[in-house]
Every structure is written in structure tokens, then in C-alpha cells.
Length: 345
Ligand code: NAP
Image 1 (cartoon, rainbow, N blue to C red):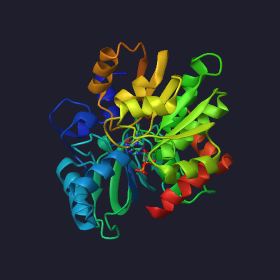
Image 2: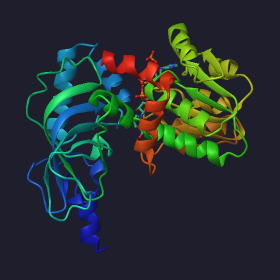
Image 3: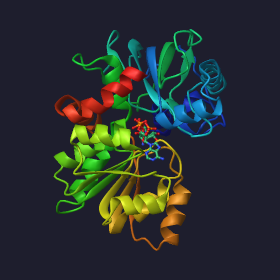
Image 4: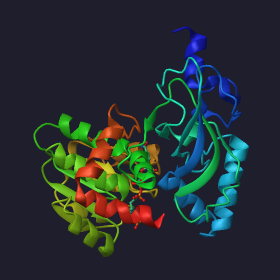
């Protein structure tokens, strides 16, 4: 592929500053809704803010909905994308395909309901309704506006059998079960697995994926007794234990014998050292949480002389969307944990 075509396919032509970086690294994107021949315009219906991003904004603004809404509008206005400058994370969106450039390779057609599976941190976005229908108190944001997909973006046509809010929530975290499945498969004979944040959306999907991939002992680590009761009722883990994921000694004590694989699905910072301590030598930690400090993880493992492989939870794995939707459809336990979260949002 010629260099110009590669740059365009990645969206480099939409970067306003600093020039020459990829859209995800950009401070500001051009969110002009007029599309080029290889682009697709989406009429936006709903944003799903990344859990770590929403939590950070809610905490910064004391949970006051109006201030959170103003903050999100300000970020999108300033950056041409919903890219939280503190957490560095975004989320994703759903909408209807509005216009497809003649040379777009994405195979989309106008009128299709889609979810974008590339992060909002690199998606040119313009909001036109001032987020007037959002109270600022949930990760899911009813919105009107436009978003632009590049030739190398990914979008999934929304399934017709599930409510849009559910599809959006599941697709947002679909990289977690896919990464877990892959690591369990690669870890040899029936590895033991612990999931931190196991009663959350990505956490319960990761537990279900680990079980389907024939993991051995499955431990779900949750924040409190309320979540423990919900996770026990969901029957997704062999052991459910309560520990603050940011307290390394408590996590290690709660997990007990170190596991072969630990998946970090909490939405708060500070879970790096507990995850490393809970993992056996030669094991693997998957840091799916965007609240992870990768320097804290690396230096912490070194400081504990822990011989663990640490993986950044890539949001993309081939087939990740279909895998997550299937887990949701076929696992009553997953549904029992995700549905109330979606209803509350
Ligand atoms: P979620 O549904 O809110 O689940 C997070 C869970 O962690 C909740 O059950 C939460 O409990 C629990 N938790 C928070 N702090 C804890 C603590 N100190 N100790 C124990 N448990 C704690 O979040 P999600 O949507 O699954 O997202 C989880 C993470 O995935 C986020 O950090 C998000 O940024 C990340 N993510 C990554 C990608 C990627 O591509 N890698 C894509 C999307 C999302 P409470 O509900 O009681 O607070």
C-alpha cells in the first residue's frame, strides 16, 4: 500500500495537532462531517463512555450530572473526539450509517444500525444536541451528532435480538473475554484463573470465556459482599472472594494459592501489584483495565521478583464481538450481572 493510502486508512489526514501523529495520539482531530471517498459517516445515537473515564469524570465533578455533561461536551469540542485527557480512554458509540464513501472497504450500507468497535479516542466526533437528553449520571449517553470511520476502522452491525443498550455495553468490553480465551488456550492444561472486578461487565464475560475455554479453578475477586452474593448466584466462578483490588496483600490472601492467569477488569487505578502477587511464577496477567499504570505494573513485578508475563488487554482480537455477544446470549449468569448495570445506566 502506498504511504499516502496507509496514512488515510488510519485517519492521519484528520489529525489537526500535532501534525503527523496517529489519530489516537492526537490532541485534536478534524471532526468535519463531510467525508472523503474512503470514509463512512455515522449519525450518532448513543455513546458508551469507558468505565474508567466515566468514573474519573464523576469523581472530579463530585457526581454532579450537569458538570459531568459540561466536561464531556468540552472535551469533544476541544479535541474533536471523546478522549478523556486524564485516563486516556474513550469508549464507543452506536448509530446509523448515514453516508458511505465509494472507496470505503468496510462493507457498510446507509441505514444500518452499527456499533463502532474502534475507540472514541480516535474517532472524529461532533455533538449537535448539547447532550440535552443525558443527565450526566451514567456511562451511556444519548446523543445526536456525527462520527467518522476510516478505512481501517471496525464496526459491527447491531444484533436485532438484543436491546441496543445491552449490545453497546457488551461490545464495549468485548476485547476482555477474547483476550482471556486466548490466554487460557495458550496456557496449557486447564490453567487456574482469577478475575479482579469479576462482577463487572468485562469481568463476568471474562469468567464465562475462561470456563468455556476449559480453565481449571476459577476465582472471582469482588469489592464487597453485595457483589459477592450476585456473583455466587451467577455461578460463573468456583470461588468468590472479597478484597479491595488496590490492596495487594489483601488480594493475594483472598486468592490463596497463586493462579496461572489473572485478568484485571476493575475500573479504578492501583490494581497492578495485587494482580502480580496473585499470579504464580510463569503465569500471565492480562491488564484489560484502562485505569492500569503500565509503569507501576512493570516496576512492581520487578520489585517483587515476579516472573510473570504481562499483557496489555488489546481491545481488538479477531472475532471478539461475536464471542462476547454469544457469551451474553448463552450465559444466564452473565446476563444476570450485566442487565442490572445497563438498566441503571
Ligand atoms: P464495570 O462494569 O464498571 O466493572 C468494574 C468492576 O470493578 C465493578 O464491579 C467494580 O465494583 C469493581 N471494582 C472497582 N474498584 C474496585 C476495587 N478497588 N476492588 C475490587 N473491585 C473493584 O467496568 P467494565 O465496563 O467492565 O470496564 C472495566 C475496565 O475495562 C475499565 O477500566 C475500562 O477502562 C476497561 N476497558 C478496556 C478496554 C480495552 O480495550 N482494553 C475496552 C473497554 C473497557 P463497583 O461496581 O462496586 O464499583
